[in-house]
Image (cartoon, rainbow, N blue to C red; front, side):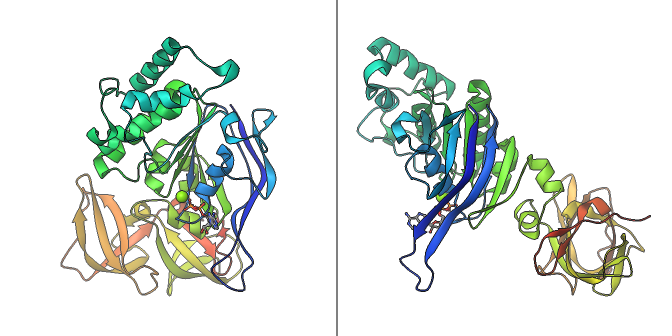
Length: 368
Ligand code: ADP
Ligand code: MG
């Protein structure tokens, strides 16, 4: 089922701060989710992710704009008629019911033509349980399950009605690191098997990048960029997006463009095309550094961290915005730890320039 958000806006009255009229939680969203895809809705806490999800499932009414499922305008359709399955961060299972009863619950509430026979309900519940691999836990109570198992029950409960759209709001946040990794792969597998159009909300860029067909990066209710995870990482539209994606994060420097050269501090690090002289921010991805004896970027060496296949060189520079610079280089390189400085050449494709005030990307073409 294709999902379309059309000029969607949601404002809340502001009760706390004086002077400000309202909070714009979702600001003129326009995007289309193709049928059968998994979309990662990504942004820091408070950027409007849950509000967007609640608009999609019908818990909230938009201030303006429309929502379509396929060709159907569902903007005014009540939640229970939308055919959405929702999973929240806190699993919200009924504690006094068994796993099986929890999964059956949404089916028992179906009315009229959609009502199922008891046998058909059981069949559907078992199918959903098999899909999330909890079919051997059906007689247990939620308190007898681990967090990961509880979250699987919640997913089964969302799937049992065969929803047109699956909405997941930070579903992995309550799980420990290992389980989080495992469960996110499970979610991806289930989504691929069922081909249900899915919107996955998270503040964790790595999580979103790893399982999404497309990511939507949000900031303060405004969409910043939409694209395949790798595309957005390789080609961020602004400083916010560049900083939000990537571990270790991108290294930011104060810089300037002068006489067709990009400078960090007083050092010219790249010959770039014809851009007007100005102050800029320079972002360099950790993998954009090349250890080079006479490289143009000279940093003070703090040390190295061994990470197995790669090493992380930790250094500082007076023009660096972050306290330290992290560069990831292959472990085959030898770093002279007795030297107070380390010098780098840079891969032009890993260097981004941003406007000093607007923080929008300034594109350039590196010259040989
Ligand atoms: P996220 O899920 O990305 O953390 P939310 O969608 O929950 O963000 O919130 C977006 C913004 O809207 C925040 O500033 C939040 O304080 C505000 N907000 C959310 N729900 C309400 C509400 N019911 N009343 C007032 N403000 C709200
Ligand atoms: Mg939220």
